[in-house]
Length: 268
Image 1: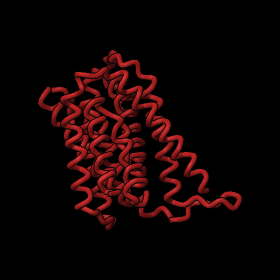
Image 2: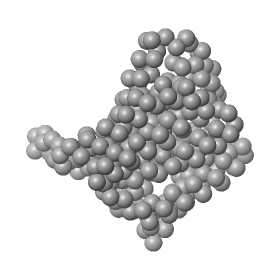
Image 3: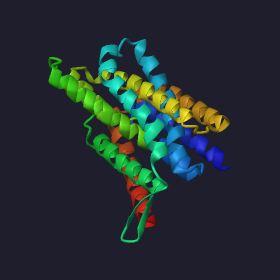
Image 4: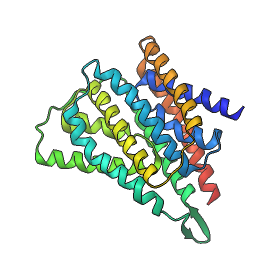
């Protein structure tokens, strides 16, 4: 019964992702942790696989619409891919189970990951809520050395965050592609999906090399329901207001993120 609930939520997550084009995958880790009872560290590994597959599905759809900018994907994606791989291969296995003790309060590896993830959820929700649903016009800047360095540094930082919490970080990637690389909003969203897919794959490879085990049966069902929801969501997307849906979902993510943050802090 618990597995069925998890798969239904996976379909809902995919449906949301298909309808609003991003942000829905932020629910992956909470579903694994709170519904399917998988420990937070392993949940980030599972999330990378699911998020990567879902992003690849979206990127392929945009590829056939000629919206993916492969040059921009390389500029941002290569540093991100390297950093997420190194994070999963070396940093995550090196983190001790008991990270820090402050005035007698123990911060474990699991609590650290979930607090960081809940904070990411709140940040993601903020950007979704404040979005007015109108496309942001690109700046069309010249790709100066300064801009390239900023993009590379942000790509590396996003890769580290992805590696730790198992989330895509599209809300960080899209603005960089619009403001620093000069892509249109649609191109930025499409290109960010390819970047997320590639760096998630790099993270999964790092996990496998670090001897992380995967429940392939559970992940197969979870992925099937997620992609099924995405397929349905892409067909329903034109029937709803993207702006209103994104704000509504943003409030849902915000409430869930605050609840998770309070719950984790209470365990310290």
